[in-house]
Amino acid sequence: MLNWIKNFFSKTEKPDVGLGSSIYSNWTIQTTEHWMEHFNVESEAQANGSLNLPPSEALSHDKFHSHVKTEFDRFKSTKKNEIDIQINSLGSTLGRLEDNKNAFSQHEQKFNNQIKAVQNEYEGRIKSANEDVKASKADLSSFKRNNKLTRPAKPMSSALFFVMILVVILIAETILNGVFLGENLTGSSAAGMTWAFAFSAVNVSIGLILAPLIRNINHVKAGVKIFGYLIGLIWLSLISAINFLIGHFRDAITNPEGQGMEDAYKALEAIQSSPFTLSEPVSYFLVALGMMCALIALLDSFFHADTYPGYGKKSLQLDDFEENLLSLKSEANFKQEELYSGFVQEGNKLINSATTHITNLQQTIGFIELRIKEEYRDYFENLAGSFEAVIEQYRTSNKEARDTDVPRYFENKIDFTWRILDDQSQRMNGESANFISVKASAERLLQSWPDIQTSIRNIRKEY
Image (cartoon, rainbow, N blue to C red; front, side):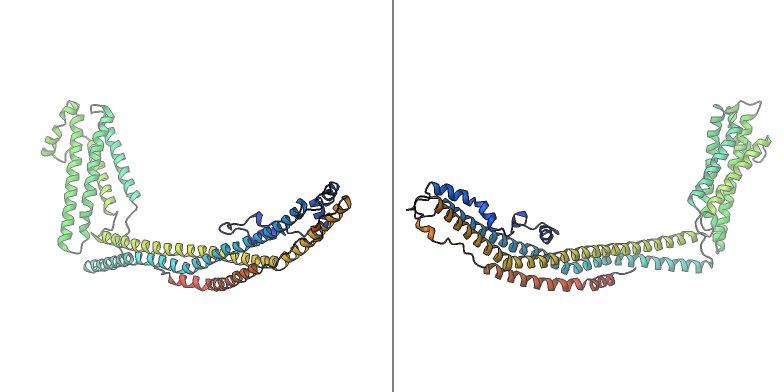
């Protein structure tokens, strides 16, 4: 029974103020024998009677009579207060149900505003990004038309692959040049590799810088095409001059009759007098090695992007605009979906809370009404009868144990009257009416939950 009662008043969101074990005192109807033992009737009556107490001339109740009467009044007050507390507790639970109902009423509008705020935030950005994509597409189409391009732009090669080729060239040329030059330089092979790395870096750098300009050889306009070939000749001239200078440099510092690095300046004199004539085959190998590495670096840079000048850049620009547009759309869709999931989750939580409050209130109201209309009446009918029997038994036993007459008030009945809890019944009627009204309103909202979810789902925009 107690577990059943506790379930009625079990907390949902907040504990009920004023509720606790103290309001569930013992309502078990006790037998008359129980109260005889409780008040120790026989012992009290015989002990007082043997002393001729209370005195025959006494006009007011003795201690035993007063105690029984006080106990009865205390029970009346306690049980009435207990029921009052239980009725008051209904207001707290009903208030939380009302709060649930109001929160649920505002739930749709709250998330409606949040989703629209996301849409307002992203619509301008998406519109601007969409315009960028359209403008870039138009620019790319115009570029293709003006340059008579019908093929799509070649995707840019992997940046990692592009860089790895350059690194391999630098390392390979540095090692080979260092081996052939190092033994003739101050500081041996390490010093040679330092010079070799510098030569290799120059070879690679020239190709990287001039490759985008050399792509102009593919341009539809003759003037631009000639400019591209001219840049190619400049590259070839620079690479040839640098690498033959390296060859003359090796000849100068490796001359058996020379003085090593002190003769390095002779490389400049030799390239001016006979630029393509070298003393040793190894020097020609160094020239060929350097020009081959320079060519690989040039081709690596040349084919890294589309070979038509400007085409790859414009295509990449369009890809960036499209990626930005897609990112904004995905972000807007994700935020809307996240809000909608939160809306459903919070709504389900409110529904469960409201349903729990409705169930608790229904059971609690029925429980309190039963207590007021039946249990309270049965309890005090039995208690009054038992207490009257206690007084009667006390008087009889006291009279038998005395030598004097009993006081005249022994002939009078003690007032063990009680009244039906009409005020509490009226309050319960009011609380029940309030509950029925709030319950009906809350249930209408709960029944509309699927439609509310559909409404919010339809507010979302799929970008």
